[in-house]
Image (tube, rainbow, N blue to C red):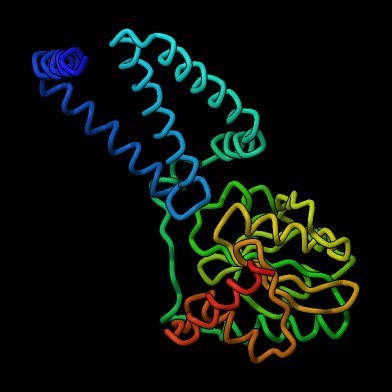
Length: 295
């Protein structure tokens, strides 16, 4: 049995060695470069990275089914092959909304230019305005007037499939602009505002709602959208409640309510990368997440 498998592998390797030419090497390099660029641009540091790992497991299962069939374990081979087929078809159904958004992103004008030549301009050193101060001043007014708001801090997630379906703004962060966007009489106040690379990239963005059946009824659409976004990405979502004026930040599907603006300011500095998180603060944050998960 083992000899049969080894002979099968040696046959494949020998065939590849016999037919491999410089043209094949160039083709392999082109494919590898394309896949690497796609991974860096759309998959790395996102929830889709777990999906890619799952696809590799499916490929491994398919190879195993071929090997099992080769060594006359045809029933096990057919079982694994059928399982891979069912799971692959299920993924298309489960991730249908994401695939639809992704195909819409591919169809946008200038997609190739944005993918290949766009650069991330991190303005940590040459920022002309105090970003945190502008955000805090806006939140202070929003909480005082009980104006609902939802802000997504996109930490380089390549989540353009979400932000690009809203209204593109690409503007410098300012208190006045934030308040204008979330003013109840404006068309964009119901959606989320996306902040990325220290700029307001989009507004009026529709986010995926959480499907957690255990979530309390007291949370409205904004809170459910914040939790849903944090469940499918590494984004941090800030929510201002329209009913109470309370401020919360959601990360990893967990909501943290803030009683004072000082703590909020410190966490925002860490989220935006303006101030590095100390080891002690990082331990506190992880302990808090552990306690929330235990509850």
